[in-house]
Length: 221
Ligand SMILES: Nc1ncnc2c1ncn2[C@@H]1O[C@H](COP(=O)(O)OP(=O)(O)OP(=O)(O)O)[C@@H](O)[C@H]1O
Ligand SMILES: [Mg+2]
Image 1 (cartoon, protein in one colour):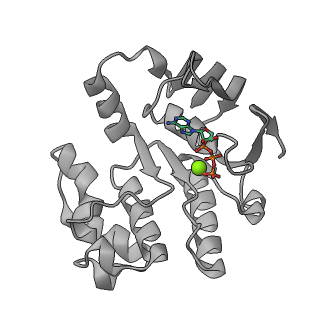
Image 2: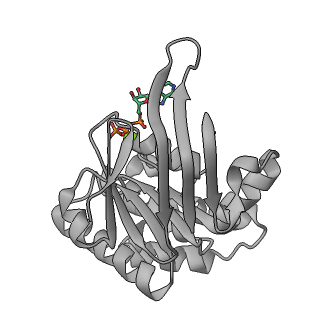
Image 3: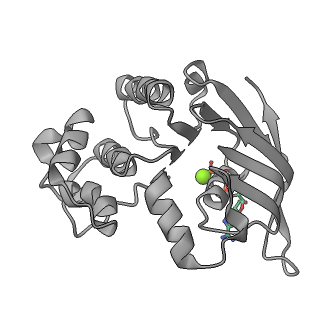
């Protein structure tokens, strides 16, 4: 489902030359729940952004669902692939401030011209937010925003879910719920999940765990 082949990422090449990933190769099979650990600044978000096509590697190739995404040249091809195959939970929730929770969760479907607010409503209910669907993100707690952004990421039934510290603002019980939910979805819906976290307990729920350190990925489970 995801394959990185000799991926190197250098920020500001030729100027400051900050090498974050060096010759990283990785294969993640369909339906696996994979956790990515690593110290702050080690390049976890960078790795997710490359897979999400929000940035490009300095060298190497990335394949997603059988497609060489590093070879996609047009933004419209990238955005179509993103909207139809991928869901994202960003490190900072990324909800649109001027839209209600319901509108936020519905947005990915609207962008595909397939709107059905009922689906957004039921996703929000599933994450315990059914009673606040008309609220604006600013009127929610950090944990509520995080749960809403997980609901939004799932709206278009992606085959790949990329989640960057999706549980950082959640209490212990909600955190476990999300980890259990991710483990279950990966098994029953064959959803491939790559989740960045600082929470070592997540490893108990994951099929595989990688740690990013000194520009390299090490398999730790
Ligand atoms: N756009 C950018 N331009 C230049 N340097 C960047 C850019 N984005 C990130 N970096 C640098 O790359 C390194 C890795 O950043 P990244 O955000 O991937 O780390 P991280 O592992 O996600 O950290 P955290 O756990 O704190 O979120 C950091 O040193 C950061 O300062
Ligand atoms: Mg990060």
